[in-house]
Image: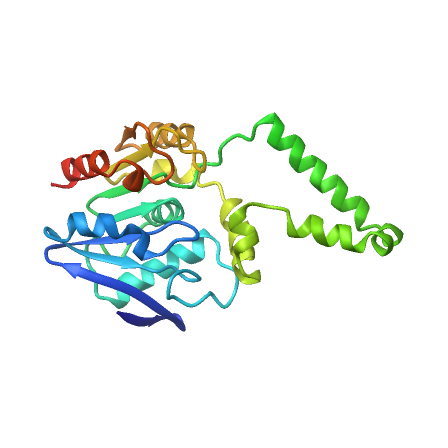
Length: 254
């Protein structure tokens, strides 16, 4: 299905019958990534999986989006589709967006429950090794950008820039790189206490993208949050341990 939200061609899928559930995917994914969750819930809910701007079949934003802009986009989508009430389920970036929405006052729709899966939003502490690596990269880049050095070592600077950053950053378009920089640098920890909605956190114990410490911070600061830890699972517990994940989600929703 397709619609236009704030001038952006927007794609989403919708299936099932019953109370509304909105699924929001993580960075570099699409609504299709969450198909296992759609399949689990479609017999009891109307499940909508949205492709966020810049992912799947939805157009890239016209200007760099941060969490605020993504949250506003999702809010506008729910208004455009006449959704007055919906359970929100988000993975990684999707969870970060939901956290932002849940902190807003006077929303035009009701959120009876929230499920955050390996959600971004709490910035994990960087290890000493990571901090030193970032410092070294910045120093090299500074030196290589000096006029004379740049003239001599232009190709070196180009290679350094091309190899910098995460795989998500390297694989993204110029616009989506700007979005990624904004998103990863936004710490939503000060907003956690504003999410008073009944919230389930589902986390893979081996998650390295959003470490378990982030989940424990959310559980501590969100007034009505509970944490379910999935053993032998990483950032995608619904793919790594589907039977365990499904049992947890069913128990919470049904």
